[in-house]
Amino acid sequence: MSERERRDEVLDEALSALLDGELDEAAEAELRRRLASEPELAARLEALRGVDTILRETPEPGVPADLLARVRAEAEAPAPRVGVRPRAPRRARRLAIAGALAASAAAALLALSLLPGLRPRPEAPAPPAQAQAPAAPLDLEGASEEEILLAMDLEALEELELIEHLDLLERLDALDASGQG
Image 1 (cartoon, one colour):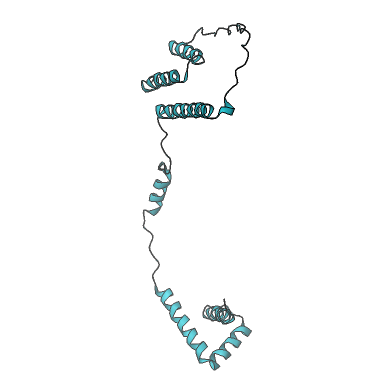
Image 2 (image 1 turned 45 degrees about the vertical axis):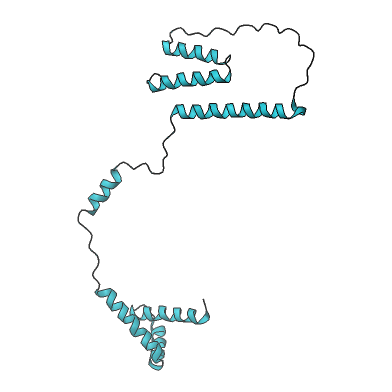
């Protein structure tokens, strides 16, 4: 803002204060002396007086009688869910995860087959594996048929290959779709 613009702004504030009766006696006397000797300043005062008159004569907008009731009704209404994306169905999520696992396995196999330095070197045959102690049996007493089936599926899951995982996911999706899962 230039120096002239700042001076004009200060003068406009002083003229507005004069119209509103907000100046002290000394400031009002000084401003009236300038108005008598500066016709340009007097014209600005008249322009501001015209705006002031228009504003005072403009009726205030009315407030509808039912505004409070409408605001309360709007405040008490349940808020709409804006910007919330619906979740993908479970089957779609599971298939996406399975697809990502399959793609990762395929990429790893491809990298191993193409890069000779990454291939495992043949080693001496490993000694026969010792039999693992069987896992402690699950306590399924009092479990529902669905919980027993799920536990059996989870135990079998450790022994399945990747393609069999997909079959299990499809069966679990079928349980979800029927409302049992």
